[in-house]
Length: 395
Image 1: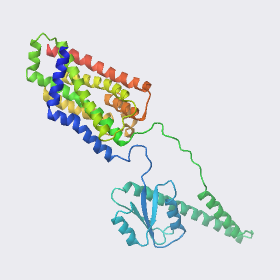
Image 2 (image 1 turned 135 degrees about the vertical axis):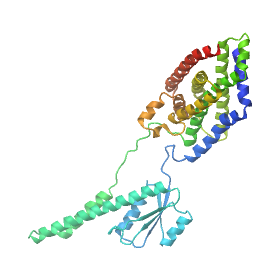
Image 3 (image 1 turned 180 degrees about the horizontal axis):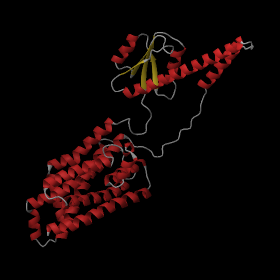
Image 4 (image 1 turned 90 degrees about the vertical axis):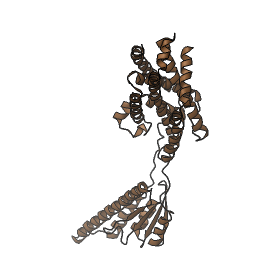
């Protein structure tokens, strides 16, 4: 009971701190909006965004018509618009009516002149892909042309030596063979992704929840030194309350404020940002319980191994940023090399984040036993180590 009173007192102190409210509750919601909106379309496993391509060619030949037909094929998510003049193409770009403009010079494909690819601002990636497609088409066409010329030359030499060759038949057969390969209808098999992906807003809602709950380790460590500086801890020691009760109260206080923070955050993201946290709120609360347990244990570690409020602030801030980066709260773990992903398996917020995203896409309870066990183990080890040191320091 006395531990609960200490816990409630700590939670009230945090809630009265405007800086803490801004940092722990409002800031994660704002960052979720910013990061989720900025990376919309990059994440989520969706299809390639539609690109509007404007093309102008002063002459029409087999090469220009072939490349334009290739760029406009179904499945490439490219809409090709033919401009009547170079000025019209540039006007389209100025009015942002197209995403990428392409100028095909006179004689393109038969000489060294290259196509001019001009992206509007923000479409550089699409322009690079289109440039690669044009260059590939030109190289393939040039290779076919050179091969045809070589074959026909060799055939002509044989004919001059006395062998009777039907040059027209050879040429027609060669053209037919090339066309059959070029325009062959191929069948592709599309394999589904191993896991259903989440949207950028979902990912960063989970990432910010994991990161800012981790900030409780800093806040919990600082509160211990604040009470020590204000002599509140000394006055508690003069009462019949045991040191063990004080430490348990501090631990529960950190957990209580973390739960308040998380429930407000999940409510704000669900109702204001329309973030889908999955079909099972019980799974979310289940993994959050063990994550908060581990975070509260880390808060005691910060308090145990720092000597002042300022030191706890510095160590806590740096530690949170490093753990947030390695745990995937800033960048998705899928972008990291294998070595970094292996390191992430020892970080609590990584286990919480991957569990949240798995729950969002629908996962059985059996997949949550491992992360909950790891988080429980991290919290238990942290509590044991910090309790031994804090018992000595407080006594």
